[in-house]
Amino acid sequence: MNHAIDRLEAKHAIAATILLRAKIDSVLARASSNQYDWAVRDILRCVALGRSLGAKASLTSHSDYLASLRTKHARKTSFWEKMRAAGIG
View 1 (tube, one colour):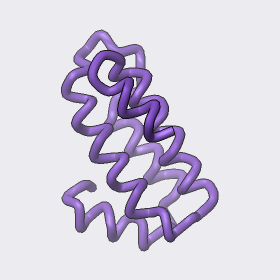
View 2 (cartoon, rainbow, N blue to C red; view 1 turned 60 degrees about the vertical axis):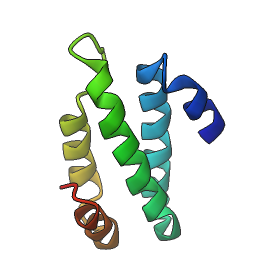
View 3 (cartoon, helix red, strand yellow; view 1 turned 45 degrees about the horizontal axis):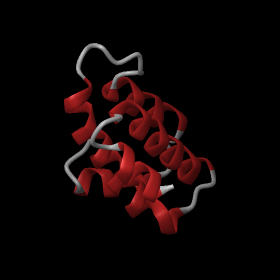
View 4 (cartoon, one colour; view 1 turned 45 degrees about the vertical axis):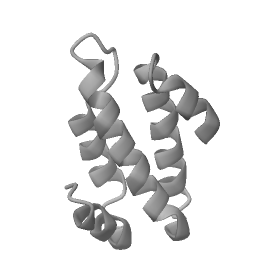
């Protein structure tokens, strides 16, 4: 999936963001703590892509997406520690 995201990023930021969020959601739903670092990196990529989306995007805003993650996965403390270490949340 990373290859597809890499190819989409430049011209199709919405599609790349959707794929990144799918990866993040999968890692958190499976509580795959060994992949939390990758999920945080994917969130950082979403932040960067969000700058190019603008108001035209028919996608949940990044802040709303993060808020939903906080609600659904509040008990995954090691993930949130990695998020804080990365300067997010």
